[in-house]
Structure formats: C-alpha cells, structure tokens
Length: 112
Length: 114
Image 1 (tube, rainbow over the protein chains, first blue to last red):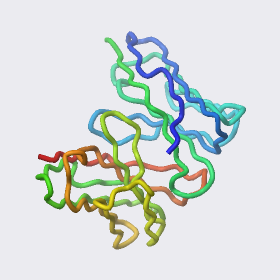
Image 2: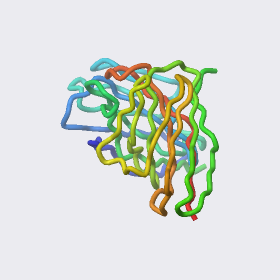
Image 3: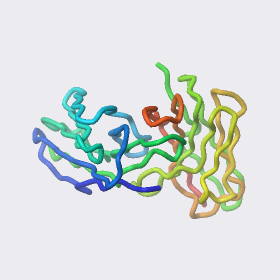
Image 4: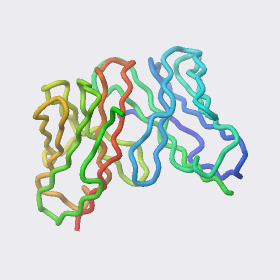
C-alpha cells in the first residue's frame, strides 16, 4: 500500500536532548497514529490522533494531527536510553482493512 | 490487561516444511490482521478477517493461508516456506474497519527458514 513520507530516517542524539520527527502525505487521512517498535517486538501504540489540529501528549511524547490532515509530527522531550527504537507513523482513511498506511520509520539512537 | 498474544515468539522451520503461527486476543475485536515485516521495513498486510469473512490482499502469495475458528483466535499457515518467507509476522486487531479504529499489534513471531 501507499507509504507515508517519514523523516528523518535515522537520528543519533545525546541523552537529554529533544527529538522531532514527522510524516507527510499528499492524501488526506482521518486518523494519525504513532507506534514504537523495539527490536524483536511488535509495534506499540504511543499516541492516536483523531481530529485535525489535535495536539496530544503522553508523558514526554507530544504529537499533532496537521490542520490540513496530510501530516503529523511526534516530539520526544528529554530523551532517555529506553527511547531507542524505530518509530512508525501510520494513518487511516476510508473503510476496509487496507486503509492503514505506514511511514518508512525513524530509527532513534540515544547516546548515554 | 486486554491484549494480543502471539505464539510462538520464535519459530524455526525447514525449507518446504509447513508451519502454523498463532494469534489470540482478549479485546473482543471484530477484525484480526496478519502482517509480514522484513528488515525494519513497515509491516505489509497479508490478509484480515472481519468477523468470519476472510479478505486476502491481491499480492499475498497462495502459500499463505489463514483460519479464524472463533472470535479470539486466528492462525497463519505457511504451506511451503521458502527462504524469502523468513520475516517477523505480526498479528493485529481492531474493533472495526472504519477510519477511526486503531489497530493494536501483538509482539510478533520471528520466523527463520533453514
């Protein structure tokens, strides 16, 4: 299926730094999701966004549903070593099981 | 806690030897999905069950089959695994298939084909 344009592909940051990643598309979506995947594990849902312009926080994580419904960003504040992993954005539109589209992932490395 | 469970977590099989992967859910969701994920790529949808209705993706090889005997369980059968089928297999569920129904993933089964 269609993939979302996710950037950056990878990030190397020092512990304590803030992180920002985003996803864009040429299509409109009804729901934006951010998942984190640790090595050898399945994706774990971090934040779900259901309304254009919505800004939602989950601890040190903040995500926003873009006003045009074509983009979303995820911020992580004061990164810690356990933030290491791959972050996927995903978005839903329409109906049917093939309505979930994934970004290409951002691999985050946190240097202690 | 309600969750999606996959067994086994790691499966090793031989080239051509059939293998079955298992998924169960306590969320009582109507929809169950199977995804294939390779090398840190995004998951790729193979098929899904909406209740008892099986829905195959057009590009899913015939080598992959699925069964859903009841609401809670879903199985992925690989009839004759090839080396290219080595991957992480993810099960996911959602309440329904509308565009506000979030998918929840299990921990995955990593399949190795020797």
